[in-house]
Image (cartoon, rainbow, N blue to C red; front, side):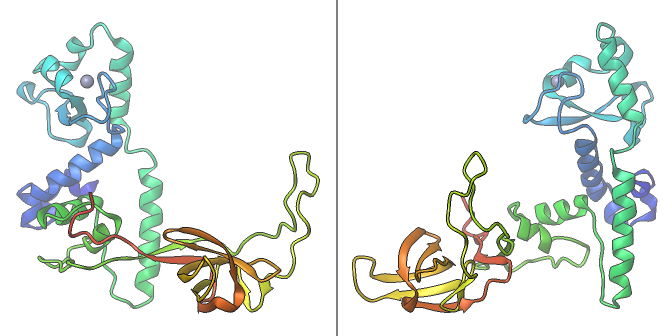
Length: 275
Ligand SMILES: [Zn+2]
């Protein structure tokens, strides 16, 4: 916030307004819930709008900025907000109150992220911080598509000018948990519907393990790689990216990775761009 109001504290790129523009825009979008402050329109292009018009001496300060759709922006023109909303005192009151309010929860978020930063710094590892606006600026100026993993590569000032991402696919790690302690499934009245769960491990396998099954005979012949769901009788289900195959005998399965509460899959490459 301090930075946006006093850009002289940062480097040339910031002072010349390119980066500052990104920061301000992101902040204003967040503050005004990405909708037109006047009519509430959403999911359409929104413009940064001066509550007190520039032409009448309004400033560029964050507290004087809001969001407007094209229609409202044109309708308001250089009118003072009090004249423009003469017939809508409720809306006027709401906008005036929100303009003065700092970004909701911003203070709490700020405090906790600096605490996190201090702890990371205490590890002695090189730590760098960035902002949402800087990430977007880095991504846009490098003409990269918006994805979570590319945004991670665009955080901070150390982002290289050229990111070599051709054929790079991210490893997607998802928390899946270690199953639950429920012994059987109940019906809607709360009575047991299934028999009591047996041992967690069957023939050395556990639900959630990554396995490779080479089925050599029968109509399920083929190679399957995926998460296994064990059954006491040793006939397992394997969930692959193509779907779930049921009834695969344990003797066909080879352990790839023991269940550790996470799933690991390859994500999409950024190029060619994902449609
Ligand atoms: Zn509008």
